[in-house]
Length: 203
Image (cartoon, rainbow, N blue to C red; front, side, top):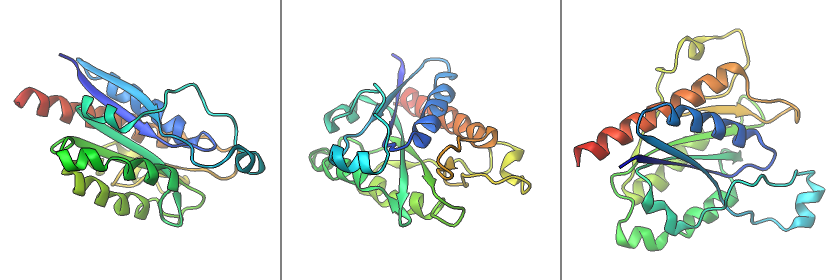
């Protein structure tokens, strides 16, 4: 049976979604792995989103908590809000209490990725403060470390990401993830998929 990796994310302006697609490509590059994109529900009303100039959501399906146990591994992505995960993703995780009660996610590997508005806006803290969510579910946090390549040491370019996971910057509004950021995202997907596959085969 194929190893299933679910990339679950919230993206308001598309930056996180672009990283998610690259993570999916990385995970899918591992033989015997099926990687699927999911987004979480929006919690803001439409009139507020319009005032924030948020574009329409893509056609990526919205996930419900009861789908999570199907996966062998996860990569969760969300933008920062004051150095922590955004409320939309927190609301989704708050709805997983039933899975926690039944211990349905224990032992599953999971990685995290994020976007911020500035270099000091939470590239590391957003991921670190989210690890508590994994711990309470008994999931295994899988960071990327510095294994994604020499780009992690490149000081000549502005880039998101950290040893904890892939990342990008959401400002200016027309900025898109850079080649270095996409490299780390691809590696993260491949890394999680490889580990999830090994764990599945060992059971």
